[in-house]
Length: 324
Ligand SMILES: [Zn+2]
Image 1 (cartoon, rainbow, N blue to C red):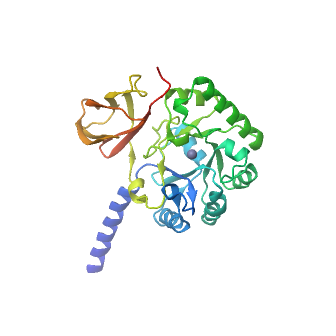
Image 2: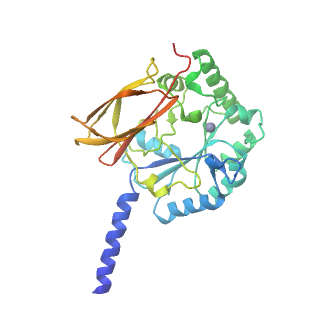
Image 3: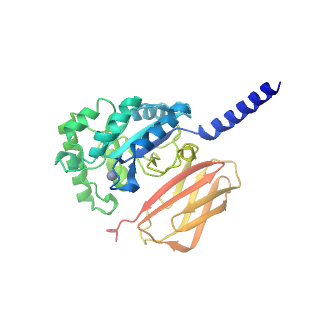
């Protein structure tokens, strides 16, 4: 009897834990592997194994990016235990230290290539022979030609970056890339439009969050993973379907003084946070949030998020330094 009761307790704890941990699919983002010269973007072999063991022991399924993309395109329900692992920049340390561990666990990945660095064989980066070797175990995407702060580029300069990048990628890989991770996670609506023009179908941000079938393929949330990331907390985040009505991009006067977000949630309040402002409880009216700042935000890069009913929507606003 005592045994049965404790078993029951144990299974209640187990289900509660699952409910917390299994919350929408998640896309994660690595940069450097076992390279302590750059601690803020590095993961040690030991910590990478610990994260992979966590996925394995807690029922997570690491799937190719294309599988998640197809499910969203088909509007299939997305299983809560799906995880997609992406790698930005294509550093040699991935080839040398990360790839063997991915192979050991049989985990697929999507590698986002900084095309100029790989084509010109810059020291720290994988060359295209190494990328083609890695492509046997994962998918290869695009991380721009020159790895520039794209929002501040003139239209002409931006087009050059796309043209050079896509054609050089195609020359080496034999196909055009479909997946694009923005350098520094910085973008605006001009860059989203131009990416689509150049055949990029899936755009990956660097805004921490989750992915559901309602996610926008042209603006997918992606959470960075490094030494010290709280993985269970990252896996607990849920996607909030929302329309960011105002502002769409960084306002021309360079001051963010009002934010309007429309959700379909049946709730009277949520929690809004923005760079330079502390998180505050906000009212919702018919699912809509309106916040005014008496002290406008004026920063190069502003991250914002709204959490309602435990689900989160995110946005990044990057100042166009060339805008008049
Ligand atoms: Zn990068």
